[in-house]
Image 1 (cartoon, rainbow, N blue to C red):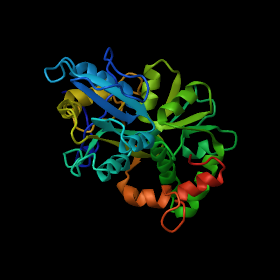
Image 2: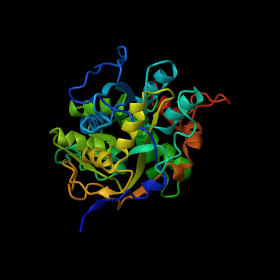
Image 3: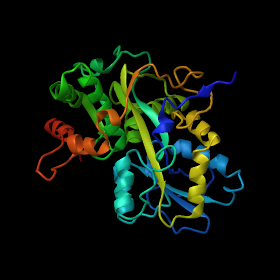
Length: 351
């Protein structure tokens, strides 16, 4: 009997287009500025984390009839920064962001169709969960969320002010803090300790991983796929899925007037082959696909366990409520969101 990688309910909630990283051997810019687009070029703008997956997907797609002759130009960075750059005129045929709001910003700017998330995956092309990454051998004996806010534990994560990855991470911590029924009081107390222990709030999820690789901190709060990718790259890290975690759903979209190849690339990403490639790089598939052994996972043959309490954004009220309640910066009433306020009080601001 063939093993399959199940979506754990994702297919009922997800759909979209995707960003791409520069494919191996493609003529792409190394920084965040594109040159003049030649015929057949597709410009990809995305958050930092999925670059390796896009590289691998592009290499496979270039072998297909649709992908032959297509050149990619890619830019990766913090999700919010990338989205704002596109809204302000940065060239993009295809965007792949960490957060839904980074796509809806482009809808409001008239750059992405309003029905971008009307497909079977509701605009989502990649998925993951929040994990705790620890040093080889777990010298601090970290077993879950409560351990990382103990005195003497240095936390590495990204900055919620710029990084979509950081918002997923901090919301997972919040979900743990309130699950015992303590509500906002328990949540605020836990996050206060969280920010007190933060030794690095990096600009993006990938920058946070790099800092941890360079020896900063004792625990990295990150995506499961980041932990797997680091281990695939030879890092001697351990990671654990805490008893309560958050499902991460990353959206993508084709922009208005984009090179038609961008839509074809999007379709390939959402095919079984495309999703198996994403899975091989540590992302949970958004459709049911035949199982693939995932190098670097805790269990390569069961890489994406579902036995934890996996909270969703819907469980927390949806992005509209979350952004106002937690992450607003001086909203219409002149008040910061709850997490923004806690972070600023820590002296480790949102910018």
